[in-house]
Image (cartoon, rainbow over all chains, first blue to last red):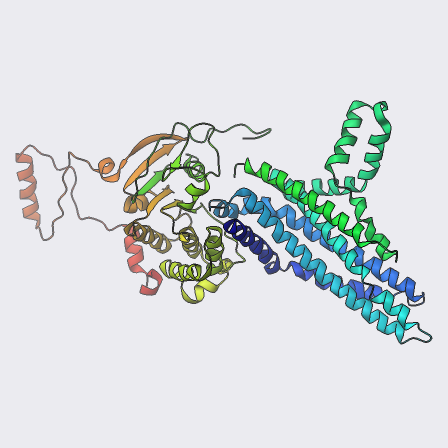
Amino acid sequence: MRGCLRRIFAVAQNTFLEAVRQKVFAVLLVFAPVLLGGASYFAEFSFQEQFKFLKDLSYAAISLTGLLVGLLGAAQLIPGEIERRTILTALCRPLRRWEFIAGKFFGLAGLLAGMVGIMGLTVWGLLGWKGLQLVGGEGADSAAIWAEAMDPRLIQAGLLIGVKLVVVAAIAVFFSTVATSTTFVIAMTLMVYLIGHLQSVAREQWLETGEAAHGVVRLFLAAVSFLVPDFNLYNLIDEIVAGNMVAWQSTLEVVGYSVVYVLILLTASSVVFEGRDI
Amino acid sequence: MGWFRGRVLAVEGLEMEVKPGEVFGLLGPNGSGKSTAMKMILGLLRPTSGQAEVCGYRAGTMAARRQIGFLPENPYFPNFLSGAELIRYYGKLSGMGGASLERKIRELLDLVRLGGEAGHRRLRTYSKGMLQRAGLAGALVGDPEILMLDEPTAGVDPAGSREIRDLILELKQRGKTVLFSSHLLEQVEDVADRVIILHRGQKLREGRLDELLTRRNEWEIKVVGLLENDRKEMRAWIEKRGARVVGEGAPRERLEDYFLRSLPEEENR
């Protein structure tokens, strides 16, 4: 067991190191100025509206940046290694294929966690800076401003974004074990991502149509309902940004749901990859 | 193989055995099935029928792969790593760690002449020959019994090629079994004990090099200091005994040896 964990860690560490040395974190140099620019607008609005705008912008930027890095990174994981033939020198070692998949995935998940963490801290710093600006204004309610600026619920939002990105990465890892081209992986993952946002609609349709719908339609709706993760669950992030209370229990339930999906996807990836000729 | 693509019969009816401690050459033109045979031994490809064993273990199993160090053809190593980091990564994948791994890294870098500053440079700055040597060190890190080298000298200049040849001979001295493929026949001749010749996935010939290449009905003597009159006399003496001179003349040096001898000492190392 120790040997197995050591091998997975070695692959994960190498995947993370590759991303760092290829300067993936440089993306963050674009992220911070975008937020700073956004923070300087809408000064004529109330502080609540300014904070809401800034949080909206920040979390959209984190999601988009993370989605791009996760998607492109995961799409390259296996096809890239096959194309460069570096996979041969790894898989000829006493390393199981599922260990390789797990290591690759955890390396990418570590990268995404690091990026979301750094971007989250940047957002927090920015909100603090905005708070300082607003507190200095005339007739400012400092307690209310600081409550908005240092809202601990933002940790919940960060956690939800992180797990959502990890699920997207796991979907891309699954497709990358089947495909030989990164374009296919990206296209399929994006398709599942979009369908995932309509998953609840498909599920309702499936439950409501009963025998009335055509067999193929029912089969399609059932497949979408069972196989595709429901990305609407992550809309809790919008609730948090809007200033509504979201219970930690709901957040942890979504995290648990994500973990189960990731495990299913990694298992399926390993099964597919096990039978693949390299 | 696969959807919408025709099936290719890469290797058919191949039977071979590599004995412990020998250097075994897989020869054949491009597309003859050398790399496919190696990948099947490693478990990277599954044969449609037949089987392979490595030190008594079924090919492709963890136990079998523990016995093998592999250097693929034209490998593109993770070029964001340094030579030392590459060996460390492969060492960890082979189950090594701690002080013993660090000691092994130093030892292997010295063996492939990448010690000192070179071992800590990124692989993207390496020449082709240095990359092959780093790959060879990576293949050796788990201390495997068998080394499989797929076209180890492809694209490498004569000096680098000679270095790899010397390394193979050194590994043989250390008791390692080496299975390597090449279509550069002169190099194979220098290092292999036995060879197998493949063509379109099938075995054409197999045997010890001295058995395959020695012309038993001819005899060759190298002489120094014989004058023209003595040579005439010798030819007459040979013909008197019913034998025939089929060739004579001053021997030529191999171009590779001449080239390497012409290089300055430091280039040749």
